[in-house]
Length: 319
Image (cartoon, rainbow, N blue to C red):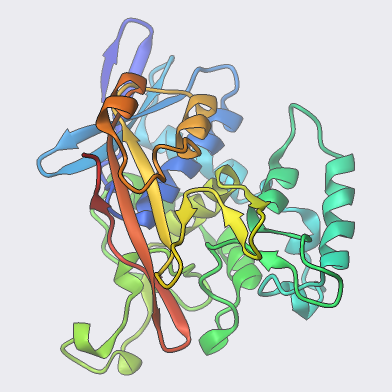
C-alpha cells in the first residue's frame, strides 16, 4: 500500500484483466466499496504489472487489506444487492434459472422499482441486469448473457447466488483480491462459470474432467455478482436481449468486451466506460479511447461445450 496527499492506494494482486471473472470482481469491488464508504471518493485504476494489467483501489483515507475485505463482506454477506424475492428459500422454481414468465418478471421488477430511490438503486439495478419482460406473455423472460448456468449438472443460477451470499467469508474476499488464486474452494452450487478455467473440455485436460472435483475462487464469484449490476440489459430491435458489453454477428459466437483504464476513476465514470460503444465496436480505435483513459480492450468469446457455456480468456484488441 502506498499513500499520497489525501489518497491511499491498494493493489489488488489477485485480479488480472484478461479473466472475465476477475474483471467482474474488480467492477463489483468498486461498486460495493463505493456504497460501503459513501463518504470517501473510492476509485479504481489498472496498472501494468509485468505482462498483466492488474487493478488498484484508491481511497481518500488509508485502508488496509483487512479493512477493505471486512467492509466488502459486511455488505455482501447481507445480500443487500440481491432483491428479497430472489433470496427467499420459497422462491418459485422457475426463477432458479431466470425462466420466469414475462408477467412474473414485470410484477417483481415493478415492486422493486416502486421502493427504489436515487440513493438506493441496488435491487432495481439487479433486475435490470438479469433480464427483461420484453418477450410476449407465454414465453420465458429473456435473461442476461451472463447466465451461463441454467440447470445443467444441477447447477442453478439463483441458488448459486444465494449460496455465495450465505457462505462467503472475509478470508474468501481477501484471497480473491490480494492473493494468487489457488482454486481451493468447493465449486458445487457456488460457481457462476465466468472463469475461463471452468472450461472442462476433455481435449484441454490430462484426465477425464467428469471425475474431477469442481473448485473455484468463492470470493471472486461473490464480488462478480455484485458487479453484475453494472451490466444492465435492454431490449433491442432484433429478437435477442442486449447485455452491456456483448455483441454477436450472425453465425458467430457471442463476444464480451471490456475496457482497461489507467487513471483512477469513480463508479459513475466506470459505468460510462463499460457501456462506451467504441469498446464493443468491431475494431476499437485507440485514438478514440486513449483520450478518455482507456489503454486496452479485452475480448472474450462464449463457447458451448455440450450443454455448458464458458468464457474464453480475454485477448487484447485495441489497435
